[in-house]
Amino acid sequence: MSRRPPVEVLLRRLDPEVPVPAYGHPGDAGVDLVTTEPAVLAPGERAVLPTGVSIALPDGYAAFVHPRSGLAARCGVALVNAPGTVDAGYRGEIKVTVVNLDPREAVRFARLDRVAQLVVQQVEKVRFHEVAALPGSVRGADGFGSTGGHADTDGPAGGHELASVDHDREGL
Ligand SMILES: O=c1ccn([C@H]2C[C@H](O)[C@@H](COP(=O)(O)OP(=O)(O)OP(=O)(O)O)O2)c(=O)[nH]1
Image 1 (cartoon, protein in one colour):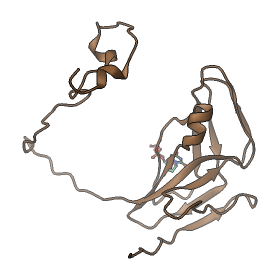
Image 2 (cartoon, rainbow, N blue to C red):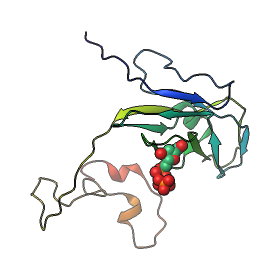
Image 3 (cartoon, rainbow, N blue to C red):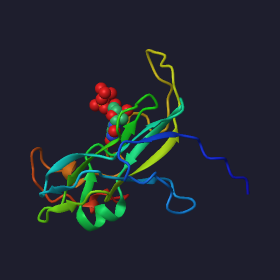
Image 4 (cartoon, rainbow, N blue to C red):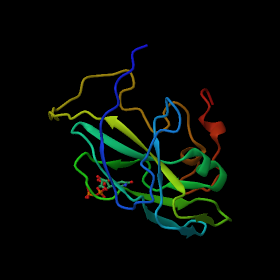
């Protein structure tokens, strides 16, 4: 099995107690990011949390700040801008914009709690060529639920029906 060598990324710790991010298991896509500030979020509240690290990615790469599924499932914590994009040229502190989506319970982050994960990926640079008409495709301009409706968009305008994924099953 051929294994590609890891991409070398320079990292500065802005807080000496923050661990250098590392993959938890072989094959993991992301490394955990911690918050250097404690926070308590009421239901619906959001906060921008500092992670205590800044990085210099090689050109042609970007890092994406993704949610942690355990936090999402257990506490309803999401990222407002998921995934956050860290540009190769960004040298500032990586920050995580968390939101508490739980309708009832507050969520508490202690200093150095893991709040998100960072996935580094190669990204293409493209050059856009404006044209009057695009080449055809099977999908064409269909989108936004064209393969199965959503209760949300199928109902009467302004209606408040219960949204259900039943309506998203193919053939319904
Ligand atoms: O979750 C995130 C998202 C972004 N950033 C940093 C890195 C990124 O390179 C920079 C700018 O992010 P983005 O381009 O998404 O923000 P913007 O609101 O468009 O700001 P700008 O006008 O500075 O590009 O902020 C983070 O630390 N965390």
